[in-house]
Amino acid sequence: MNIDKNQMEDFVKNLGVFELRALARQFGVKSPTTKKREELLNLINEAIKGGKKPDLSSDPKRGRPFKKLNSIEDISSKINDYDNIPIPSVDNNEMLVFEQDSKLLFPLEDEVFVMEGIIYETDLLKGFRDLKSGETVILSELIKIYDTLKPGDKVKVEARKMRPDDSFITNKILEINGVKTENYNTIKINEGEDFIDDRTIPFGVGLVKIGRRNLLQLSDDVYEHESFDEFYKFCKNNGFEFVVLGTETSIENKIKFSNLKIENDFTSMYGAEPQESYEKISDGLNFAIRQREIGKKVLVFVTDILDALRCLDRYYGIEEGQEHSSKSIQLIQKLINFAKSNTNNSSGTLIMCYRDLDADDQFLRYNIIKISKKLVI
Image (cartoon, rainbow, N blue to C red; front, side, top):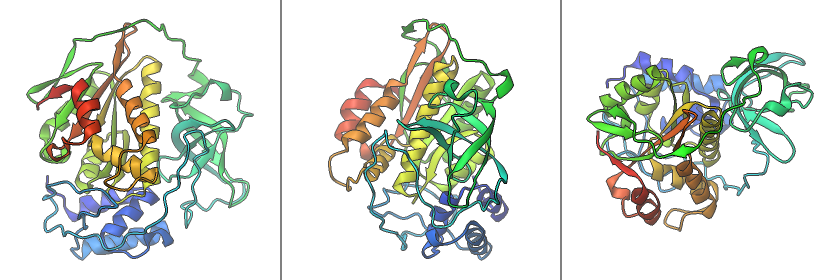
């Protein structure tokens, strides 16, 4: 996969502010968290035009790089600028609101924005993080359909701020799970019964078991496997909701997902802050579970299961080399339990990629490899 400067610039334009910061850090931009979106875009594009290459080297606080990233030539081997920000431990029931050093949006009073995200719920409220900007949006309890909305629902809304320092609040809900609000009724699904599904989906020379845990050992990064493109297209053409989960994601993978127009891309870039990685995993998993609950066929593709576990560990304050956090393990177990089929024709199919060098990890060996179908593509 050859990536030219125009492809890279087009890709960069569509990144959110947190992804831009991570990418800027790879291009050697100092203190990217202090810069605004437009400034980050200009600095990155100047670096691209000047022939500079992103730096994806190993850093123990960032996780390991992929072994082979040769479609962008001469990738160097050291990230020099790492903002060593203390990582807070946040319970799943706490409200997930985070501060940005510079706001992506600068709304005037009562100015309305169209925003989209995956609903989460706390003891106090329902809200979501805008998929584009990362801004927090609070759902107003005055909205008639408020009680219908569940964690994992994907909503598109009109939102506004009363004051610049406030969180966004919904003005109107436009769509729920891709359906216009006026046409959306409370989902009533025949619950059916779970069963062991023997149906399969072709993936390269292999077969993916529907409603099961499939484990794929990769020697190269996902973007280097042309069979992934055909597999994604097959799933979309056959009615599957295709979800990609991943952390420490290479630029090549992000460009591939963008070119394939994968709508449900819940991956964070290499070098992203631990909180962003946690939020991507949490939102993507809740979305997948909810779509299965409302009767859809859902497939979750995890680009590197152990990278995801390690990023969750960093979010919960666990350093490299220590035992995995119990909270990290709980979230991965929730992902594992997502895989099942039901007689109401809904299903949750899971594909987890991993690397041979990670096979000695005790959790991977005894909690994932042991209970998953081995997939060879």
